[in-house]
Image (cartoon, helix red, strand yellow):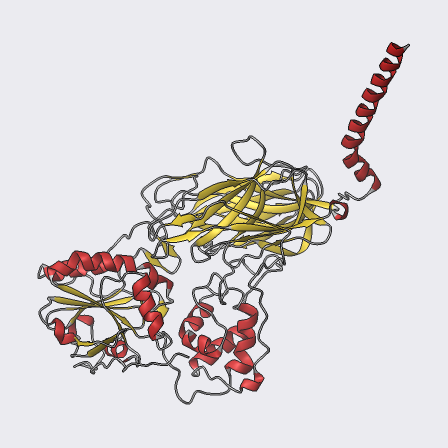
Length: 612
């Protein structure tokens, strides 16, 4: 996809080509080219006590996150005789992209290009970011991760173990490295497929339709995914990573147990599709006949709900820091509704998708301090979004009501990506004509405001219930927890004694939340008890746990916890367009008109009496 205009980085074969432990591998001298075409050799740093080679990729989210940490380590250990060297071995990373990456992330160390992947093969590098520490004799003394702060499904406020820093400290002190190898997590280094791949499964015939249906919703320009999958070259560049995340079930992101419920927005690959992806990658990722490519999918870069009738934005862009855990940002915005408005569709649209993890919009009455419930069923939330979550789009005749004068409350959760960013999130609204709305939709929530999870509790259980006083239609379910969240389940206990699992999320992932939209509305008879059951892991066994030694309480920070079981319902027997319902809706207006008429008649009568 990308051509090279400079000479490739040439790496000499390691002195030992046998598979040996890191402490036994000695690396020969090699030549490096930077983004300006300047060259240097490993031997140019012969006076340095240690050389740290770190493999990076411009689109890898973990590589981006760790640039600040690498800059800190460079400043800390540089004066001690340690040289940091960045290497990009992705064949799909173009020269200008690598140069822009180095500038954008203010790299405090040189970044070099490994176009042919020889340096990566020489050292045995597989992922980005992955580091190798070479001693004065250029023997590998440590390889693996930088630390354990970030990883797949892991985003701690601080690392528990700083593996790279510990290894450098030990070597500078003349000690052996206590842990000389760790597993690096991140993206696979992108390498070209073999020259003669097998053709029994090809991209054009077999894989492109899967990518269009299952991946491109997010993996296209301007969306939440860190890289695009629009072409064959895009897919082959990320082939190994695609195979891994599909095999592990991490992509497409979906966490509902398939034994319970049917959902309209289920993006999962079928077993046959998974086998096709695995076969294609392991057989060499053949392109195939381009005549067999499906037509390109048409995507609107505008709103998924269509052109909104009104867009409401937070008034000023918010600053998102480069690193750390960011507190929830809460912003009140007045949409200016002078009369009740009915919402048929709503879409929260981040101004900067790279940093918005999830966001919700609540409703607040005039003069109130906090959001409040509204409507006959007590609706608590207007809309929510998370990566991969569809916007709110209600069926014909269903809508949410926003009372006149009420404010929107934006609650936004940001994630740091390694550089300071700005965001100005908006919500787009499509209105429904009041004369067409038969059922008012409410988003309810079961929560535990007094949640307390004991230290080191590996399986702490919380359950909350709610009883339906009317016949309802259940439309959608949306569980929400934080970093200690382990599992979440919705169950219904019916008046006849039967009990049913509505949704089970056995492995909750704070990094990928979803709103589960039922394929068909489910009737819940009056007297049905809705159970929300959550389990939390506050132990060392939870890799995302910031601190297992503390009691975790309910709160807005990611390091706090939440028990939020959202569910969307409507009154099953409600018909706002029936004669009786319309009369009930019109009664306040009729009463006001009657009173006004009476006042006018009384006033007119008194005036006539005075004239007599």
